[in-house]
Length: 143
Image 1: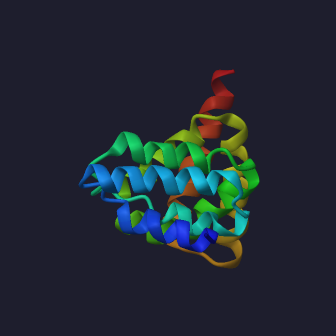
Image 2: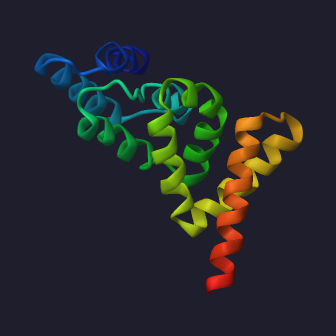
Image 3: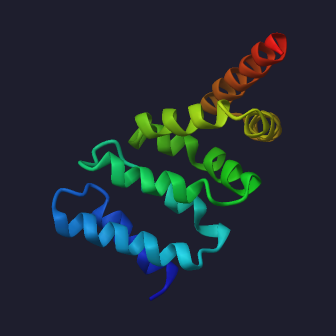
């Protein structure tokens, strides 16, 4: 099966309202873990959905996203955050917080947000950049 089909299976089963949907979601994610081009990262971020009945299973998607190179995962997250915050505000907050809690990730995140906001401003990305800048300045003062 193609990566696109596995992603479609994730999308179709992301609410995980039955054991069958949970099994299909987990199996598709396992198949994608074997070989997924970084170009599919934005689509995977958009699988996150606050309506999912199995947040602990959905967290396996978060861990999968975090298994990619930092640069790739941050670029992907930033590219979809305006859409993601509309469909999955809780998951957006979780991802954002996880990035802020890692100084290296936070610094890279701030730089990427600053660069994209300079060329293509969006108020959500601007808020995230301000938050990352504040977090880094607060962290720097403490150390």
